[in-house]
Length: 342
Image (cartoon, rainbow, N blue to C red; front, side, top):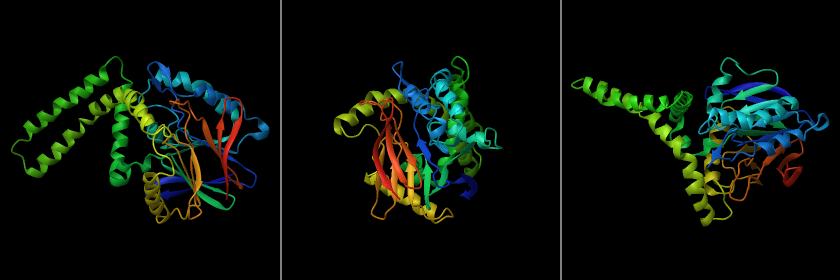
């Protein structure tokens, strides 16, 4: 396995080349720490057994963690540690090369690659994208939140959200209810700034107003974090199930919404230095899938390891010089669902 790095829109992108006979395993959306009504939704015990199943003789050359591995967005630190500890022990024993691609629920991990804080010989942290070369083919790997409408329409402006997330995550580790006190304190600054700038030039007053409105972001984020899981698992997911029993969460890779967003993203990527992609792999939607489109491009979704109305899919992808395999861990062994050759 060889690793080099390139740049895309000022962000470092690892380019990983697998040798003949080497294999990459790709998983996403384990959401370690996620709970709903005191029940852990993350299938961390199944994931631990999945990692245990690899021996030295079939150890993958590369393990790609394709985002939302940790539920930093809504879970407490103690819940994350409780569910992540055993799987992390197995990751260390596995001794494979690991690429961690940051998702939207563990975005704070992107800051760990600055200065190579955690990166080493066996670990690479990618803030957005990874290019995987295998069997003479090139593929783009990313978590998938980049396909959401806000990331497409807002373009580079969405990066501001990274800092809002970081501020919220920083507040959430404070003891007692200090995060709420500080967030509410920011709100009092808004009328104060407007009062102090009364009579100032319009441009200065407008800039101050925008800055003050940004101070409202922490309380909005804290409120959403507090109710998000209840809204999703208590309202949205049951409603989605009643309207369409074939869909548990998000969209399938065959949906028009995903295909259009993916087409736009690939056009941007391929025309700005990363070159043509023969396959695309992402997660985020929690709906596994593997298809080859009319242009011969393979599109794959890793699925997830989170409990749903019909149970977790516990799905993952394998990439080798022969092609891409979509499989499911049934608790004791791998079940191959689909295989698409290159």
